[in-house]
Length: 429
Image (cartoon, rainbow, N blue to C red; front, side, top):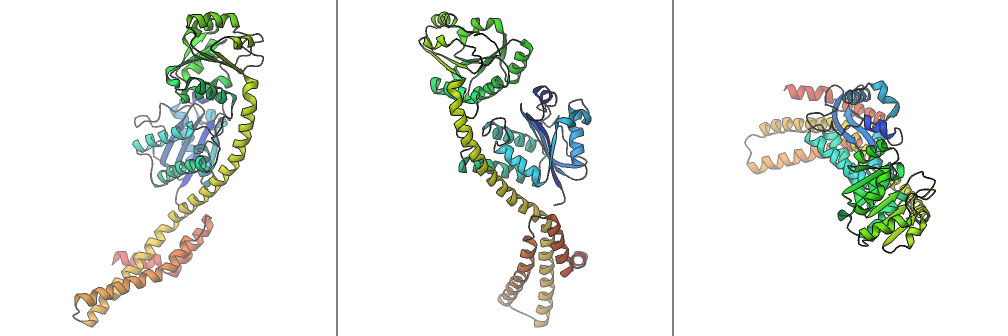
């Protein structure tokens, strides 16, 4: 392979939400604003930009990583020096392995969550529409999708809730069924609320209200998930319009009491309400649970099932990693075939050209021959060429994954069959 595969990115582990927002490339993923044009060192490129990660995947030569950082930072009116401290870099098979892990949601904030695969497919579609993919990245992305499917089919890595927020939303789905017709309120805008918002959107919620003591942070989270921020002191007023309330503040006293909810229920004509209190200390007075048509769960109700499911997922993640390692080996073999392919083509062309020359000499010596005799001779000659080429072709294809091993085998084959001289002479002839 005469090109490297490079992945440069940042995610929820290496950068806070403020940095992820600053360097997001969601507005640089169309033909008019593509952040990584296929010029210079870059031959192919794909941009993945989500709320939890930004990753640039490219195939090319030279100082590819440096060019990616330069393109990325330029698109965000920054410098590579400002961006680089938050980034990671993977090259060739490590880049392949990382991409397979991302597609299989082993690298997500929530192990096994399904959203990332859809985001990766959308990123690939955009790159294809912008004509920035080629042989290598097309093959790599399609393989990533099939690896993710295999992981989900052969393991249970995505089978159960593994976060308090996810478990809360799963409970809400059991109670309300179709979530598209319901509204939700998040009280608090920390990591728990961020995860809850993500899962609510995945479940189909169309409107999310966000209340937080710091309104700016509430507005930030609401903007991220296309919701609406409200002042904390107004939450009682807005309870009339929402069916699902998830609280996760740092308050030392309950912020919602039974008397508040009782009045709201009357105004709602006793339509059911679902409360998840994942704060410690609790945000919601336990007496709320005594009200009719109210479902209240606290963190202890969810923790045990989450811990059990998390253990199951981690066990399954080991199986998923084995699958990914196997698929990386398969992809490495394909990359290796790109190195030997030109030599195989030269070998085949050499044999066919020599066969044609010798066949013409033989036919001239034989004199006039009928069509059947000529066809029989041509079939014999081409069959002989294929059989003679089989062993050297298998010798080249079985070179393994190591680039050094491929280079040595290619060199031996080209010298043994004098391909560089012979093929040049045949082309000139």
